[in-house]
Image 1 (tube, rainbow, N blue to C red):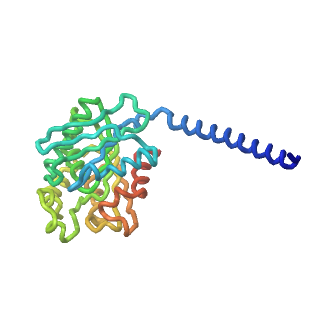
Image 2: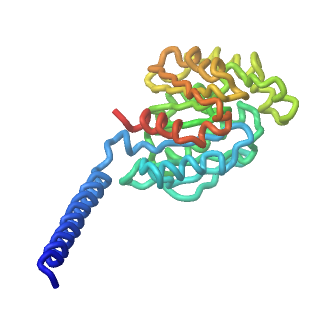
Image 3: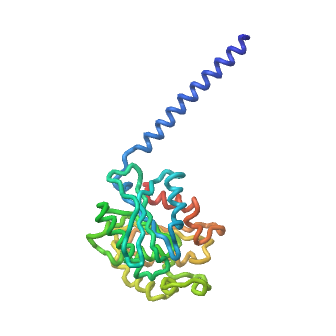
Length: 278
C-alpha cells in the first residue's frame, strides 16, 4: 500500500469519525430541545372544529402535519357529538403532556343549525372539563366551525362547567355570510339558512358579541382565492371581537380554495406561530 493511499485512507477515516461525532451532538441537542418541559400555555389543549359538511377528514391532514411534519403537538383525543348532543370519545388528555395536546371535535350532523352546533361544542367542552380536568383551551375553527365556536363563547360566558378559551383562530369563517351566489342552491340543511348574509343567526352573533370574554385573543385568517367566503366576510370577525386583542391575515394565493385553506403549510405556519410563538 502506497504512502499516499495510506494518508488518504487515514483522512477519510478521520472525516467519518468527525461527522459521526457532530451528528451525535446535533441529534442529542435536538432531543433535549424537544424534551424541554412545556410552559403552562403550551399544555393547553387546542380544539379543532370543522365547518359545514365537515368530517373527520377536514382537519385530519393538518393535524397529521402538525404532529409529524412540524413537531408542534400530538393528537391525543377525538370527540364525536351525535345529533342528540351525546358525546363519545377516543383517547385522552395526558396529565403532564410532553407536547401540546391536539383535540379534534366532529359533529355527526354536519349540516345542522348554528344553535345546535353551539350546544354540541359546549357538550364537547364540558367533557374536556369534567372528564380530563381541562381548565384552558385554544380553539382553531374552519368556516362554519368558527361561527359555532363564536356562538359557544357567547352562550357560556363565565360558565364554571367549561374550560376558559385562551386563543381563538378562525379560518375562512363567514361572519358576514357565505358570499357565493349559488351556495344555497347546491347545498342543503338548516346550516345553509344560517350562512346566508343578514340571517337571523348571524345578526344574533353580532347582537350578543358583548357576552364574549374580553381576554380571549383572536386571530382571523382569510384567503384571496376563497370563492365561498370572501375576504370581507372572513375578516368581519373584527366587528364581533371588538373588545378583544385581534389580529388578521390574508393569504394571498389564488390557487388556495375555501377548503384548501386548512390543507396548506402557509396556514399551518400562521396557526402554529400564533398559538405557540412568543
